[in-house]
Amino acid sequence: MQELQKARSHCLLLLKILDYNMDRSLIIAVLSLLLGAALITGAVHYVGANDIDSGKNADVSGAYTSGIPTTVAYVRSDVYTTYYGTFEPIPEVLEKNEYMTLHPTILTAAQSNWYITEQDGEDSKEILKRISDLSDEICKGQKTERDKAYALAMWVGQNVAYDFDAEENGSARNVISLKSILENDFRTTCGGFANLYAALCNAQGIYCLCMKGASVSENYTRDELSDIPSNHNWNAVAADGEWYYVDCTWISDLSYRSGQTVPAAEVRPFYALMGFGEMSIEHRIDRCEYRKFNIDE
Image 1 (cartoon, one colour):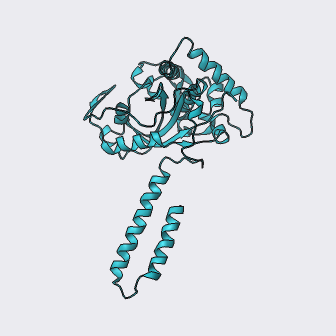
Image 2: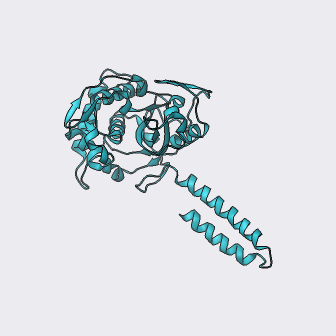
Image 3: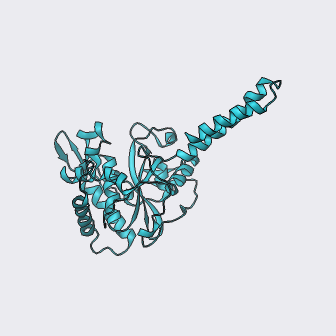
């Protein structure tokens, strides 16, 4: 809002400076241009901001052995092949996804605690220790960051059930927090899938982002991706100096309905580590966060 307030002040100053004998239509045109520029600036500044106010673009690269890629390197193509076929990308979706990956909102440890436990002030160390031990167990024998990122994605995708009974409250803290996932026999919604995967990667020193945005579904086609409302959560991970995208929710259709676990009928490893172009055919990033879980502190 600061940008808009500044623009308003500049407009008032301009009115004082302009000759009041000037054609009023010209004055209105000038003011419209100024306000338009301010709105664009505001949109760029706030793109990707979360409900939690936090600093942006903080330097967290020192915690990661391979560093964080400063660009999204991918081969520009007229088509990309996904699990469901080959499709043409939407240029504005590609541009937005690239920008958002490289400009995440960085949450502090205190802000990230919202995603760890259901109660403010509760000691999170025990929860994070359980996450760290689980991550080590899953990654046993894996040598590279990429192999670890893949193993973690496949484990989450095949062992966490999508909780349709909780879907109406899908973003609630008692559904997606690490504590709730652990205590509810690994049931959650897509926000919890992304949250758990990020914490498991963090435990291995792998940089992982949580994405929120739009995805195709039974109700929305790939051609409509620019206009679909936000409806999904997934991840981006920097492994061995490269960006990969992970949708643990889509890896399998293991679910929980009417108090019963429904086994998965299909497993889709494609969504464990996607390339940028392939991800962008079915996903549009609207918000991007780095959560500082402080597992080793």
